[in-house]
Image 1 (cartoon, helix red, strand yellow):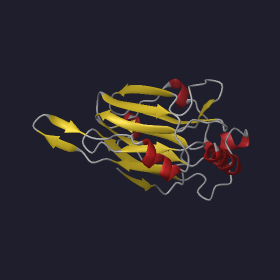
Image 2 (tube, rainbow, N blue to C red):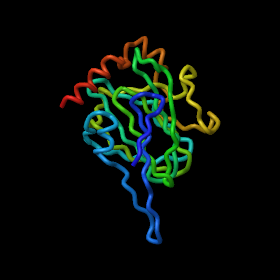
Image 3 (cartoon, one colour):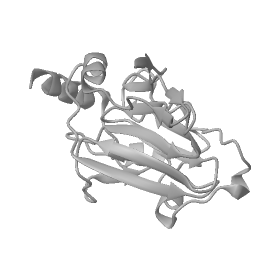
Length: 201
């Protein structure tokens, strides 16, 4: 298992060796020791979510209040997604920037998204199934969103905008500038302080 940090600090692409034979395939899709070494603390699994989406469905940009936020370990179990990480940490050197990786059921790569970052993906195929391991249970009062269509962020989708399918909630989400003005975003300093707290546990 190999980890590659993305251009947004706190996000890692996780590659696994896929063993194939006439029976099918086998791989280690998650290793607590390897992930902990990379991120500097133990990833505490609190919940697993699964979504099934048709082509063009966009989920996100989602994030949660810090602390405790919600770190995510994302795997594409069927189909393919383009997975986005957005830096929404006020004061971060890469605030407003994003990076993306393609996750699919062939390479079986995963993506780790740290506390305080925004996350979104677009399904590239029908019946795309995504599994998320998360560090905190869902809490509706602490969950927030930013519009994935915000032109100031400029996420690049691999299909025309009129083919994208968003929930009413995601379509009505504020822009990054509006969330910043409302003081609804985590600060880089608060995120770093919380990560230090996790490392000391």
